[in-house]
Length: 504
Ligand code: FAD
Ligand code: DLZ
Ligand code: SF4
Image (cartoon, rainbow, N blue to C red; front, side, top):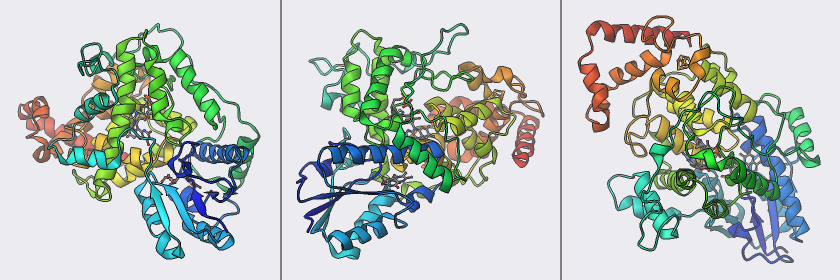
């Protein structure tokens, strides 16, 4: 008889995962399951599926090499969902108890919470210790204040972990945040940017690709070329490669965009962080060793992981299950087909979507200021936008996708996460990228059939939502412009927007 059956989920691929802490190799069994319910509940990118299953299978092999007793069930041999497969395994092995590290998504936690009653076996859910901030700790912080500003949370984390802090609890370099130095446009003659580390698919990955090609032909995105790391060892190599070749310029060009440059100086590490191949503590530790690099790059990078990543997780668990129920602007439009096929005349959208289709990756500013910004000002229904983001990115898990989509880009939470909607016109896109020079639309034109749609949709969004936003002090300039706008101009904006939205 098995003492503990330890369930390891697809995003818990670490030897240090809390469920393994007290494991007894000769009495306990580990169970890993590939199940169709997880594959099919959204239209996951095919590269995301390969990443997950190849990384899961590599991890199972590593566990076996370490003499753990592992049962691994592949997707063509498993029951439909975690519960049904677990039930089958429990009948076979009759464990005294089930253990699992806290699932990262509310949907899965709900499923796990039903196991004890359904299976009649005690289930222990153990805290996920990979994060800097515990779920309860964030809730305590959130309940103690009126506004949940990322910046305040981040400063608290810096102090708690003594990261980039001097003896007097003051920030190293004199400032908490070097955001103003993170907004450079990429110059025309900028030298070639080193690409992220390419990992060649091995036997395990190739087998996953063949299996998926047979069964899941309709999922979104290009399966090959597949180049992600699928082992801890290669993920660490990818981290080292980023620190050596791209971290120096991460800060200055963090907000830049350039046609055909898919990664710029971004780390492309979220895919490994989110499934457990990299631990955020080890990533920050290594980055902090580079004391000779510009502070705006070091602090800028630390802010993303210690600040934003932890903060969005905190928001997710603090506000779920209600968080995804809101629709502040009552946005109801259908997501256009071009989000899936990239067939649009808007060059910025076409580029970001095509690269998403190829790589299951877009960097933050592309997600925020191009596809996200468009979804906001075009009034697309939040649930459809969230499903898209959850499907198309290899790093997408609801705990991190939802606050970024529902909160940061769509302001559908009414301002819990952001102090104002991130709406922007073509002017911003033109300033931060070179997309506009190859676009059929004219970024300088505000109205008419050749005008950049971001221009009139931007004003249409604020005109439509005036009542909900006009008291926001951060939008004072927007609404003073609207106040001085002629009725003719307003009508033109509305007509152009309606005409355009009908065509998509
Ligand atoms: P870098 O630019 O190199 O940043 C370093 C790391 O910081 C990332 O690997 C990531 O772990 C963390 N990070 C940076 N920004 C954020 C953020 N806003 N929230 C959480 N972590 C952050 N990130 C995901 O991991 N999964 C998602 O599903 C996801 N969905 C998003 C949806 C939208 C609409 C937006 C605007 C952002 C989303 N992000 C998501 C955040 C961010 O865009 C990605 O983490 C980042 O682009 C990943 O690429 P990178 O590793 O090269 O990041
Ligand atoms: C995303 C995903 C997919 C596609 N498939 C599996 C799977 O078959 N088995 C598994 O353990 N996890 C999978 N995942 C991740 C889960 O959907 C989910 O995101 C995590 O369990 C965290 O809640
Ligand atoms: Fe995008 Fe408008 Fe620029 Fe075209 S002109 S690339 S639609 S911002």
